[in-house]
Amino acid sequence: MEHRLPPILEIGDVLISTDILTERFCCDLDACGGACCIEGDAGAPITPDEISEIEASLDEAWPQMSASAQSVVDRQGVAYTDIEGDLVTSIVGGKDCVFAYYHHGGGELPEGCCLCALEKAYRDGRSRFIKPISCALYPIREKRFAGGLVGLNYHRWAICESARKKGQELNLPLYRFLREPLIKRFGKEWYQELETVAEELSRQASILA
Image 1 (cartoon, rainbow, N blue to C red):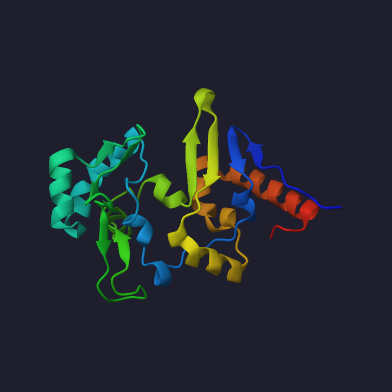
Image 2 (tube, rainbow, N blue to C red):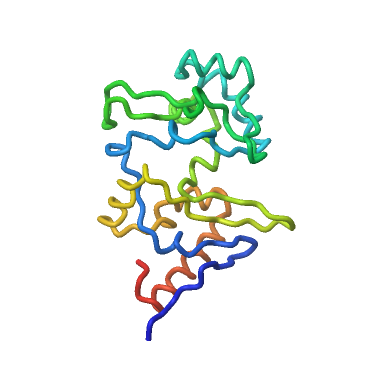
């Protein structure tokens, strides 16, 4: 008998698209160069609380930001409301996040790889804010509904093809690749329940890792 997974699962107050459990994914910066920070037509979704944290970390991130990005932030701030009414990080030239910068040699990262100025300040010990949770969770996208219900969907983007290929090679499900940010966002107990559900579906359908 063929087993079919339900398209949506519910864990606590979170609705989860099952392709988050079945899709294999692992970011490959060597191949993509951090394109998700500089492609698209809007910035990264953020919350009002995150805006406050970004503003508090701005001085530490500032040296890594381009002159164009600094000009945008001086003019309109670290965030704006996009055409869909969502708060997002400010962008340069209609696409680049203002916090994107390019790596120029050293370490294991490829030359010209796009990185995050906020995350660099955090990893250098100069800031307590690492980056918006929407960035940490990508390619999972979060949508909030009335009554506190949250929906999680997998956002399939062509620029992440190398991540899908690497995930297949490693047999690494998306939810496991994003274990730490999912725990940060929803808590360890919630993630453990997610793992239990995934393992049960694996036994039922024999398609999950």
